[in-house]
Length: 253
Image 1 (tube, rainbow, N blue to C red):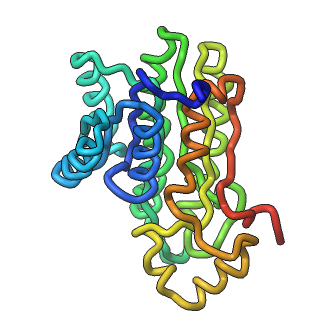
Image 2 (image 1 turned 45 degrees about the horizontal axis):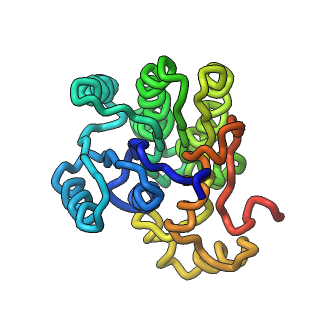
Image 3 (image 1 turned 180 degrees about the vertical axis):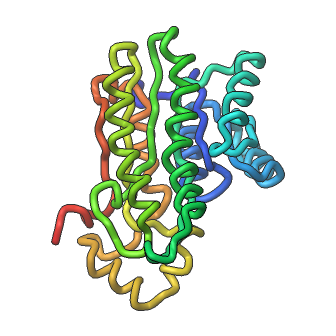
């Protein structure tokens, strides 16, 4: 369907050398988008890019730390020089830190906030500066179940993802009139490297399956349909929303 066709569009997906970011980037490429993969490990990024190029996709890499404002600004200036217009931005990069609040240092707190929330503001700001004159653009922020609900030992992550929900609405308040749609995806518990320790913990695994109406963990590729929808013309009058892809977890007690 042409509504979901991303041909002629360029998508920057942060944190896309593995996990959810790589799955989303691959899905956007399958829908026709040219990709800009991002991460901090240039060699791993290039390896992922080569794999995608072998499938016939158009892929370039941009190795920079999303938590480094100067590096983000420099990356977008490089895009300008190379005539690369980012039509779709997926703010996916993030880290996790599991520790009780009373044991958290301010530096640990700040690192998670900077990587998971402030980076979405900075990368989103730089993308929007270029999208506003073009009167078009799609920004998809990656939230979480913790955009709505808290769980013990992940306070900075929870606060950051709660912030993502309202950052999405704030961006909408300022940029929707310029033809830019900003939305978010809230993944449930997904099978990723970040969650490997939890998946391998029998008690936690049982909790996730018991708490989720679908009775299983999600797969990264199950985010693709929502990501393509929010990146395409099919969502041109949708903005400021967060769609939970969680097997129903957030809907039940």
